[in-house]
Length: 147
Length: 386
Image (cartoon, rainbow over all chains, first blue to last red; front, side, top):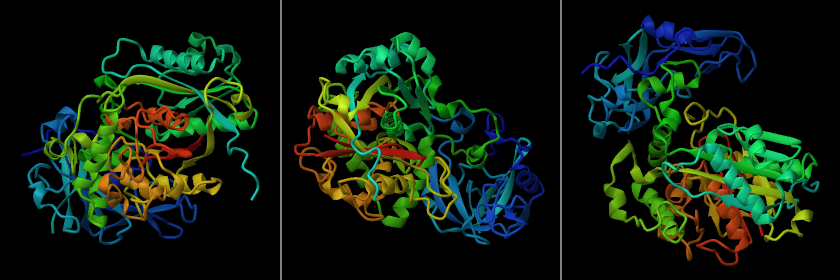
């Protein structure tokens, strides 16, 4: 089943901090912000490096491999577009390239897969996953499939 | 160490609250004013003497409107604390600091809301384009506070072996206390272990009974100097120590992005709280711990030092949270899960009642009571003493 596009909460693709990330996902790239001065990565993106206070940034491409750090299975009451899909999974992954970087996502069977397709009872913390890019309206969300 | 400017210098001398319910006919402003008025009457202080006001940034009622209704005088100190349920004890801390430093003499801290109104659910009031930090969680369907805390809970269970049975200990203890408190929403509504385990999911691994109530109501507290408190009718309850807590690299509610997400704001507030205190966690015999969700109890027990890291779930075993014989009777009015959820402000008032000796589940011989605010958000705590 495909996502119900209307009613999903989507990011402002032009937001000052997030725009390069969302432009990356639209191209099929998973980018993480890094400090152009000291090289430390940070997520979510923000203007200043908390380690050296540089405001110079760069965006590093990630391999897209990760492991499941935690997950939940929301049930209603939910906003209508999400309630229609419930129960579905939401996961947090830690990136293999840099396990200090964690991201919220969904576990799916592929870029077109629904967020409610995988049996939640089969999801395990620590299982390896890899990024896929799912189009939702005008936005490309990184999601994750089993590696 | 220099003597604390704050310690025992200010007392809570009056408390007031409205009825709790769903769909109360009164407006939020009316609820706030009724609670404040009751708190002033209880301690015999005239509204014109109030010169300090503290509430939450999420409080719908502005100082000007409260003052114009209750008939307050010249207000020389007013502040608001952010981060939702993290603010409750912070209002007491700010009020106490303002009195201790002479910025005001009679401060009122309050919270009123109609949370039971579906339209007031903060998570349902979102726009479709997310510009702030929610853009990193909500698009994937992590929508509500319960989803955000469930994510930390699953990780906590994984790392430390906590089980649903531990969360049931929390829910059942607080329900037992509510059944001793006629003012509690869940009075006369017992909760069994079987009911807990069979309850519908809200966000796995959290079920219905892991969630707080949705309540309409208002509560207020009046604070004055310890000196002035001696002349007032109610037994003074001293603000022994107080603290706010915002740890490094913390993100409110979706705290998944730092090195150690399970070491939350409680740990930061605790350091400050105990630093100047005459008590240690071992001396504390009663606590009111913020319980928007049951897993916040084990996380807070660890943060405030009642047990070691990862031991908070096991701490709940053997009725440890239950009046009268548990190691630490907690949320003795029923708390947010079974008395009322007014952003944790009812926990402050129950802390006061414990120190006055007037709780419906009174803990004998307790010299102090810990009251905490939201865990998982920038938070605050006070240690009240009698």
